[in-house]
Length: 516
Ligand code: AMP
Image 1 (spheres, rainbow, N blue to C red):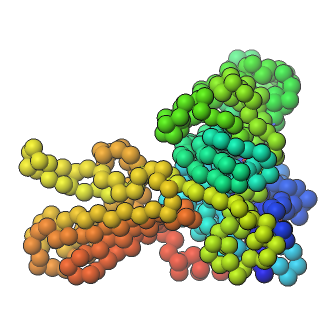
Image 2: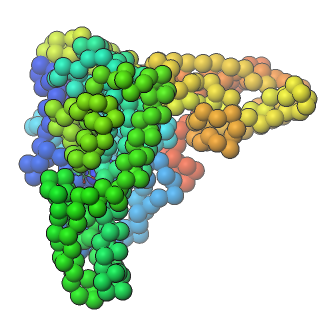
Image 3: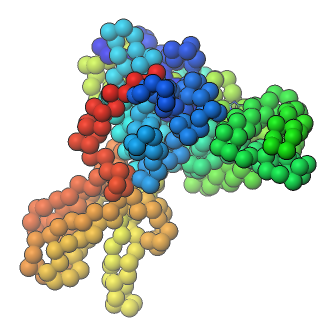
């Protein structure tokens, strides 16, 4: 029986956990002996085809930032983002696959490779980003059996190892993303209520605020810019992260900035830092309010607050959450590891449900009684043009088929009608968002559905949307007269289209690189 594993593919760090023989998740250290691996990739210029991932990549970054990639998760699903190295353009999925490959290579035990995995994603990731994450896993040669939302994975780990009960709020502040999830926990039984988040709010942004403080202090002293090159930027970004971590432990941090006009001794206080990041911390509080409203709950209804993600080590996070809820948040688990550990439990539950013969008796017994009821994280709809009863004219609007926070699995079917006589094409637009106005929703897929010729107007098109328990969306458009149907594919843009054949071909090509 193969190894069942969960992977936290983070913005700054990634981690892999496997289920042991009694169904307990365990972090697998990388070949350097570290339990978490920096999500950094370095394309070696001395050894052709060699790609360094993790700490070594991070160390090489200061010397050669042009050949290094960090924070690629921020670009997941963005078809315009590419990293050009020696004439080859690398997509975010491909770079992420290198990180996954390193984790799984290091985590493999002889004759027992890591195969069936669940990869975690931020709760607010849209369909295109989820698909891109799955593609990254396939490119790394893995069998991705599911995707789990990071706060849900963390809650699974908390609930199976700690005493957590009642209405619980998960505050997940990582390296690049923020999620807040509200769920009900009763022993090992979990029901997700709702999630909110921001995919560009995390540790990297706190580092940048500190970097701005460095630059300001240097400018004031020397009337010269501190950062003159990409190398300088890489160096000071690392310095800022280091200062940030020091300020989590101590009230002040001292450094010397070796800038172009001379060196400058600086002292940054925790107070100064907290002031610089105040707008970002306030944004997390606004998102808590939005989540509470969505859950029809008040602050007083929350029984416990669980912390997830390295950035929750900042004292300001504890202070603000304690002030808001009137009790201290829980930090009994390792906030860097709990997502990977929970993802491994999720992988076990997924296999038990879908392919129980692949799961050993020990793991089956270990996961007995763990129950998880998840919800759909966004509203999904389509753009259509129904007749306005008042004006008698068609009006373009977004019609929602699947509503946010519906328990999974869920599906909805609705019939729409063609507009014109002889219409041979239907432009299909799948949307994500709550608004009726098409301007205020995201278009996550656009396709042309070809229809038979010579037909009158008003022919029925049946649209079926479904969302499965593995957090994936499916859409089918059916022309009822002809029986013709179109299954919408969620791909990363036109240019970076990752159809199954492309994925297989690219996976083979990536195998020619040496990931270390
Ligand atoms: P994660 O993605 O959950 O591993 O979180 C990584 C982020 O947590 C990075 O931005 C780190 O700089 C940040 N982080 C880790 N430890 C600390 C700390 N002691 N104080 C502040 N931020 C931290």
